[in-house]
Length: 280
Image (cartoon, rainbow, N blue to C red; front, side, top):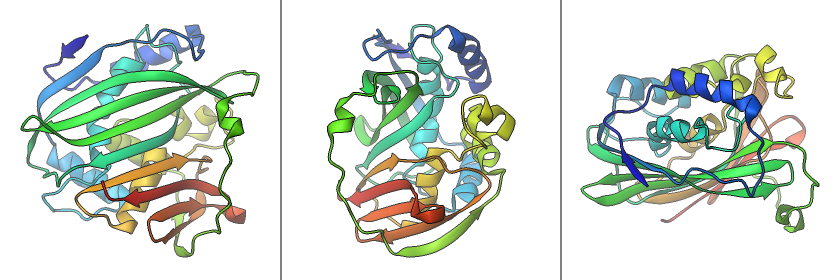
């Protein structure tokens, strides 16, 4: 079912609703999920908010071009409306972004007009719980110019036996380090202010501990945006990134890249984020 919106939903009420409903959710991979497709035509970018996002993530400012990750921010309120709904089976509180695939088919200007669409594609089992796949599309002139598929994990007790455990992980040499970044304890709050994603696992050690994290963790989308800002990518491109381990705040990480691959490593060489950039 398609539902056409007249404006981007306000995030604070959605977060509050999702928080209130979270204790009553019983996630499982075979649970029913909402089949609604939310659309928002006539979308224009708030240039001041875009500039703030660019500063937090390390993108150049003042250019008439959207960073490749920014459409995710535009679609986030619609995704939140779906994931905070009573019929969405995963609890919003503690939900962790685990991967994203992005395809940008053409350059996107910051001053353009777009149509946005978001829907939940399905649920899949994970060895640590259940994942939801959320699809976002941006259209200009009726054509898809940007699309993404994100997975979000709700952690809960499982038998630990899923298809994921049977996958063979390729043993690759660590990528050469390019830069070392020292992350302040406020990175989650700063990114939350420009993106609207104020999940408590990102904001403060006390709220993060409620969901099993020793300290607040950086947003996955901040880590991939920061890496892609440093990598530099063409207008037509595809990106695939997996958030493999949380980045605890504060902390020090190493950005590494070679060829089409990039990654973010922590102490002891632990890989937090691994990704690949390739032609769309």
